[in-house]
Image (cartoon, rainbow, N blue to C red; front, side):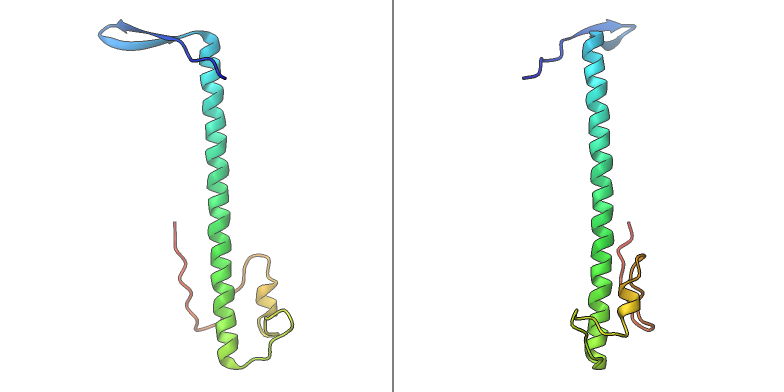
Length: 105
């Protein structure tokens, strides 16, 4: 179990000031860095999730257009007309005339 941080509260020039031991201050700063790193990682994962959700929505839209147009499907479930767009590493393009809403953050 972690040792509780010991501090004293002093009043200097009418302001309350907390006084910590150097070791406690070092631990506090390390905890802040760890928290910041965790927050940065969580932000990155949220961004990746949003990007993946947008790609899924685009793929669903492409599949819906494909199903309406009667295009033959391949074994993977994606029509040959969409293959180039699906294999694009940047993300699938939206067929001309189809509007897909992206939530902007």
